[in-house]
Every structure is written in C-alpha cells, then in structure tokens.
Image (cartoon, rainbow over all chains, first blue to last red; front, side, top):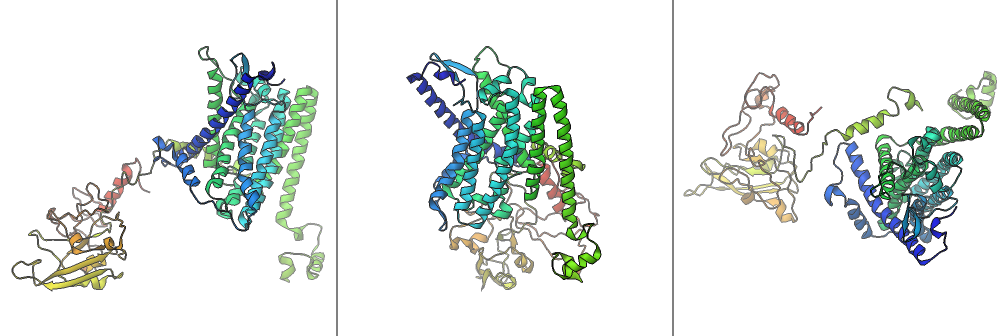
Length: 406
Length: 231
C-alpha cells in the first residue's frame, strides 16, 4: 500500500508536510504528557476526596511545568558505582520508544493539503503494529539498563522484576494483537482503522469478542509498569525501584516516558479496538470530527488507566506471574485459535473451541494440583509411607519440620 | 483469583472510587481557609490585665518553677508606690518565654495563682531569628481591650483573638471528678464570664451549648461545613 503522500514521488511539498507532521506530533505529545500528569493527579484526588494540585495556574494546570522546572535545576547525581554511559543512556531508551510508538497511530482521517493526499498520522509503515511490539521491547531496555547501571541493590531488583514482568506480559499483548490482525487481514494501523469504520459493531472490540480487548488492556497496563502492576518501582519494598538512583532531569525523563506511554497505549487501544478516529461526523469542518473522536476516545482510556490506578492495590510478585502465565497467555492463545478457526469455517470453529475448552480444563486442573501439592509439602505425598518417611528424615535427606522433629 | 468470587467482588473497588468522585471534598485549603479551632487549644501565651488596666502578674515565679521545658524566665520587683503596675506588693518586672523550648503543656497556667498567664489559640507563628522566638513582657501583655498583640510573624485570623484570655482548669479541683456546672473560665477583660460547660451527666441545658460540652459542640461545627460528620 504505502503512504499516498509519496505516490507521485518525493518532492519539496511532501518533505515539508512530513516535517510538519513530525513536529506537530512531537509538540502535541509533550504538551499532552504535561496535561496527562495534571489530569492523573486531579482525577486521582477526586477519587480520594481531596483537591489535588491547585496552586500553579488555573486549576493547577501548570503544576507539571513547575515540577519540571524544579527538576531541571536540581543537582544531577551519578552514583560512584554506576556505569556512567549506560546510566545516562537509559532514560532516553525509555523515552524515545514512547515518542516513536505514537507515530503509527492514526489520529485523523485523510486530508488534502496543497495537492497532496495526507494521512493524519506521522507514518504508516506496512509492518504497522509490529512496530509497537518492537518498540515496547526496546522500552524494557530503558528500565532494565537503568536498574543495572545504577550499581545499587534496589534498582537492580526493580529492573529484574520489570524485565521479567514486561517479557511475560508481552506474550499476552502480542497474542491479543494477533487476534486483531487476523480479523483485519492487515498489519497497517491505517488499514486496521479503515476496516472498523462506519459502525460500532464493526469495531474490533465487538468483532473479536471482548476478550482480546480485556487482555490487551491488562497486558498493556502491566507493560507500562502502571499500577497495579508497578512492582518495578514498588516504593514500599524497593525504595523507588529502577529509578532510585536517578535525580534531576533524568528522573523527569523516566516519568515523562511513563505518562507518555499511558497516552500512547490509550491511543493504541482506541486504534486497535475502538475504530480509531471513527465516529459520526458532520459536513461542517469535515476533517475535524475524526480527530475529535480520536482524542475523545483516548481521553476515556486515559481516565480508565487512572481509575485502575486509584482502585486496585499492587499485586504480589507471584500473583503477577500467575495472572500473566496461567491466565492471560493461555486465554489469549485459546481465543486466538478460536478466532482463527471461526474465520476459516464453522467446523473448524467448533473443533478448536472443543480443543481450547479441553486444554483450558487440563491447565486449570494442573494448576490446582500443583498448588495443592505445594501447600501439602513433599512429606505428605500419598505414596510415601510413615517408615520410609522416617528413614528419609533420619538420613537428613528430607528438608522440612519432619527432619528436625523426632 | 479469590477476589472475583467473594461478595466484595473485583469491581467493588472501581465502584467505590467512582462514587468518591461525586463526594464532597474534605480538604481545607489550609493557608487560605482554616478550620475552627477547639476551645481549649493550647497556643501562645498572653499576660492578662484587670479591668482597671493593672497587670495580673505578681512576679511569684511559680510558672517558671513548674515549667518542665524550663522556658519561662521571671523576675519580680516591688511595685512603685506612686504608679503600681499590679495590685498588691510585687509585679512581674521581667517576663520572658522562649518559644523554641515551650511545649504548650499549660502547667504554667495551672500554677498561676492570679490567672495572669493563659494561653491563646494561636499556634501558627514562626520566626526567622532566635531573638524573635523569645517573647518578652512587651509582646505578651494584652492590649487595652484585652486582646493579644498581633506580631508580624503571627497568623491571626478574624475571630482568633477573642476568648483568649480565659483560664481553663485542666485538673478537677478538690478531687471532684464530675465538676459540673462550675465556671471553668476566668472573667475576660472586655468579655465578662463565660457560661459553664456541660458535664458528662448532661444535666445542664443552656443556650450556647445545650446539654453538650463546648468541645462536642465545636467539633460538630467543623464537619457540617463540609457536609458530613465526625465518626
């Protein structure tokens, strides 16, 4: 397909348009991040029956600006044991993917500017949505290298947690994207949006069943290290996690990346499942309505992210891994197979459905058995009789209270 | 996944936070507006005067003796016969309180035989030099209307400086714990005597507080401004 902007070759006008699109997206993201931080703090204080920032600017809108200015002028500390180059690199590895992911998001329709057909998105590469997966993998490096290069215990623990968590949840994230791609037959975000156009029941959230959307929402929250999955920065146990040693503007960059990712992921959810800029328009200012629809939907998902943060307590690490590996990945895998079967034929659909149910039951059974066995301990296994257990205990081969008791 | 099956289900948390959005905010924008203070708040001291303008302090140094933080310094002197500062023989010639040490325990107020030293409700004062922290008699004595002086670093608000020169007995006199219907406040210069507080038996019933203690009345005043009540 390719970008229609370059259908007549690359000329000066096309280059200028590309540059303008990049600059507009860049500036928009910066301002939106600033507003997002304010929005999050305001909404969360509403939910906690307090006022929130209200001193800087009207309704405290400029609070983020004030905080950012303060961070700029703080001392830039680099710990003695740190790997200086990687330590300085890590914040940018976190921030740049956050910027880049937004480039594939279509935030409007198609407009004509100076005889050029311009798609309202920074880039529409053919591999489209794979770009998202690639960049969210790069973002793991930002977190991981930040923790590793700090030369300190807690950041390292936070980084290990973060990378394990992000890798685990990326599987579920990818599988739910695969379902969308199966349904739309294209990787291009523009094509994904186009295939959902004109009616609510064409939106992927309906067409793929609601499950992939739920999985994507949970997995993307985990992927962004947002609460309730913010184990990598668990203040209560890690003293701040991977960014413990960071101060000044580098610290600000991490948080900019986090909040920018919140916006970007909301935009991606809207693109994949809610028709992107699709919505009823009017003849007056025809190009504006899709943009408004897109930002309206994105705002709703930003609100949902904040709502999740305000409502749910942080997961324990084993709960996090259980949810990722034992629930989300099998569920998304099974659903993917069912959707694939349903796209092929009815017979396939029922076969795959049966297989998925069978596999799900087996998995559930194995999880239950494993949990029961873990709780009972090795000594209470039915095939070990009392004498043998005592023999094992006296030889000191069996760990546990039995070996020290008699 | 136990939280999905119990009656406190997964979405009850979401419901709660969403309901909170529409609940009235409990925050007070503190420096701009303040909650009313409790009637017995221990704040910075005042040195009181009688209706004729003479000082109540007789320079007996009991307050300095009882002070656990050792922050009061008093020197008594004989009254000049032609212009006596206080009724009687002696008066407080030097009276200093160091607010870097004071813990506002009110033991000086308990000890004072003439109810000369009491505490106002002002606690929002901060200074930038140690010299400012030592209040001398010049700063502590009330003005001609019986009101505390307003120093530049003190945050007095409308109505904060009334009812400050009254004296509250914290311990029950003569070991009578109930201590009902007694006036626990001394007369105030310019304000007269306050009504006695209700005790715990609710026998009293007056215009200001009903059968409740002043404390209970003013406690209920706080949250009703914000549409709730204290639990």
